Image: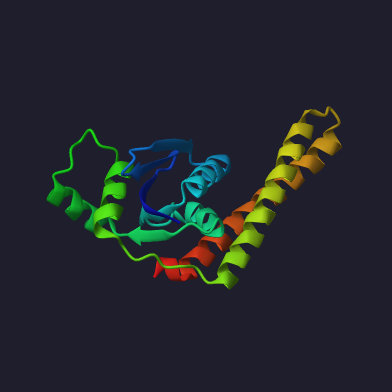
Length: 184
């Protein structure tokens, strides 16, 4: 942990934006598995004192799961608190939401709630399995160009099965984060 580095992480449906204070560093990544891993790696190298994430009704859960398994210090804050903070500091429109969250982290210093080791182990196992299924799914999709119809049907059936399992794993990851101490 790097005392004095505060990160705000804005999680959107299509992108992730992170900003660090006081250095003013900024990072952007897609809100897909590769982008989430990219942000996790960058933030692991920065070793912030805290990463503030605004609770948004669930879209932040996969990101929180990945960051938690990386051992990063997370704090969820309510949208209302961030809005009130923005009003108090006179936040300008030219500042990104991630920068605002980093500023909030620096001044408010919300409580970091560590995830119990059992939950971290569960999340790591679920994320590992998710990556494995994603690799298998990519292989199966690349095999779809075969001209043999029965084989195509079998591959499509397998793809459907993998997609259902990935959705189920995603829900398990979300539930593990929701039930952990960082979400309370």
